[in-house]
Amino acid sequence: MFLEVSELTVRYPGRRAAAVESVSLGLPAGGIGVLIGPSGCGKTTLLRAIAGLEQAQTGEIRLGGEAVSQPGKHIAAEARRIGMVFQDYALFPHLDVGSNVAFGLQGLKPAERKARVAQVLALVGLERAGRLFAHQLSGGQQQRVALARALAPQPRLLLLDEPFSNLDVELRERLAHELRGILKAAGATALFVTHDQLEAFAIGDLIGVMHEGRLHQWDEAYSLYHRPATRFVADFIGHGVFTPATLHEVQGQIVVDTPVGRLSDVTECPLPGAFEGGQCDVLLRADDIVHDDDAPVKAQIIRKAFRGSEFLYTLRLASGHTVMAHVPSHHDHTLGEWIGIRAQVDHVVTFQRA
Image (cartoon, rainbow, N blue to C red; front, side, top):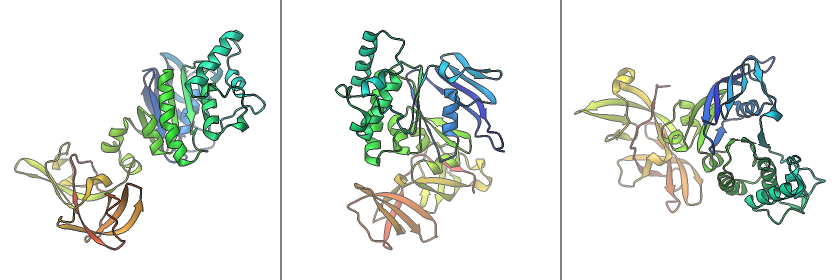
């Protein structure tokens, strides 16, 4: 692993709880990692500690095998060769784009500096913008200039702290895909902080979900969604609900009884003995529930959100339990209407009953 964080803890004076508590993660060279979580969860503090802007009390940070932070050792931020991109772009208004990008290249000869500026501006798709000033650029273009400036000195690691938060939603998602392409083309190793799941899924090779200073899971997006390690990750990522269930063994097979019917032929299901009396909570994602008018289980639509190609329905069963379902948008049912549903689950995610 190129970036290794081991049991890192960061505390601020006067605060009882640690801002970052015993966090460990690894990121390979050329990999893109994303930290996601609610406000105040510690993701920006962790990023700042890796940059050298905050000092850790315990644990270790290694870059390319070199310890940059450990008990009794703290290499200053400017000596870590880390690039940073912030929310506000921090471009110099009195310098044109080319001069902004060249700002960190003072150690190069003029010809080398000019060539490197041209190279990174081409990388971010702004090869003709070198003579323009920040006020002449759109928000997305300014963000690309900030990225080019951070990449220009060829940092060992690039850190990005919610760089799209000032942009509108549609532009953010498009730029997220473009940013991934730029970072991969540059061969950069990067760690990105966001609160937006779509950004995280669009950009990250590995994604970490943080809550109250702890890293709950560091994994690929598919595993976060389908195999969440904790109840918090299951609740935070995607749309779904926890519903009470009971595990049984019937003719050598595990079956799961839920308010939406019995689930059978499921894989990755724990044994009934894992829970007292086989009773647990099962995570049902919105894509686990299928609208089927012929299904025996009926549910009432109590909320609907139009998503373009689909609706996200919140449904209440006769038992009083609620589930969610993605339904094609041409199935435009009215609030209060009862529709047929069935569960279509190929692996069961269980937790202790709340």
